Amino acid sequence: MRKSPTVSTAVVKNDFELVVQMGVSPEKLEEAIGLERSRLDYSDERLPIWPAFQLYESIYTMVDDPAFALKIGEHTDPRSLGIFGNIILNCRNLGEMLDSLCRYYSIARELTRVHSRINKDRMWIVFEVEAPDNIRHFLVEKFFATILSFIQRLTSFSIQPLEIGFSHSEVEYLDEYRRIFRCPLLFNHFENSVSFDIKYLDYKCNRYNPRIKEILSHHADMLIPNHFNAPTFREQVEELIIKNLHQGQIDIEMVSDRLQMSRWTLNRKLSTEDTSFQQILVDIRKKLALDYLKNSRFSVQHVAYLLGFSNQSYFPKAFKRWHGMTPLEYRNLKM
Image 1: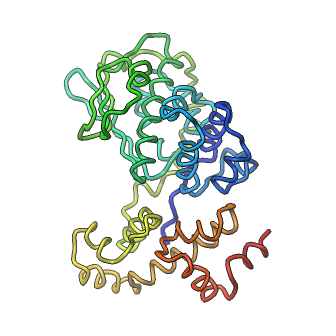
Image 2: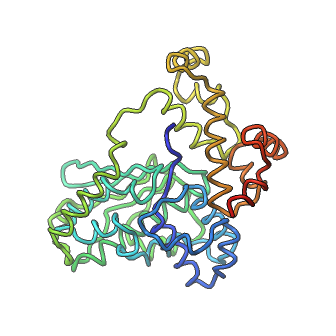
């Protein structure tokens, strides 16, 4: 089965600690996201992406500052982001840094795609992310604030974007956008993108270490092999289910529509792989249920929500049918 999307523990720890510096109680954050702080001490590990989404929802209610995502990005140090950040830190010039950003960003956070394009004298970095609408807004803000922070930290030049486009609407805290980005801002744009004059691409970075970059890049390349392999049809269906499961609207009609085919065609293609839509959905829920109950502090009700059960009372019954015990009995057994 295609694995559920993950995020680097180092990325979650960076965000967690910067929010604590804003005055939020770490204990309250732990309780809100269902994750003990000690789980964040191992920077090479991966976490399911949903606790990271929950972290942003929690921060929004706990921090009296709607621009918190911009400030997290502004104060993020590349050294705090594990292998991805340290590759960025050791690049030769800005062009190499942006290339590495596009290649390796998914190691920091899956369900994202960063790519570039060049036209005449301008380079664009485009950011795409799969997330609930409110969380996507925060992740976009944090991404662009982080990138500009990296550029200022790693070069000795004053480099300003030509413009930044946001797919979301104009925000009320526009002064913070202007303070951090210092360039023309486009809202309700067709994409999330930042553009630079290509003359900046040759500007040298001040921490360049070719040997460290080579070693880290070699290791990072081994972490992303699946990104270059075409998924099976089953894996495509699994990926759509996992991305949308927590929204509680998963059914065969939605998935077949996303894949631009009829329900009948989807079932026929899955039957050639000896499976069905319903079986895939059950397999994913069974696997994720065990993962959430074992590795998080989410309540049983919240796990039911993450698994897309329209009625939370259905989850304990389904879990007992799958595993012969209730969710609480399983959690107590694993503690």
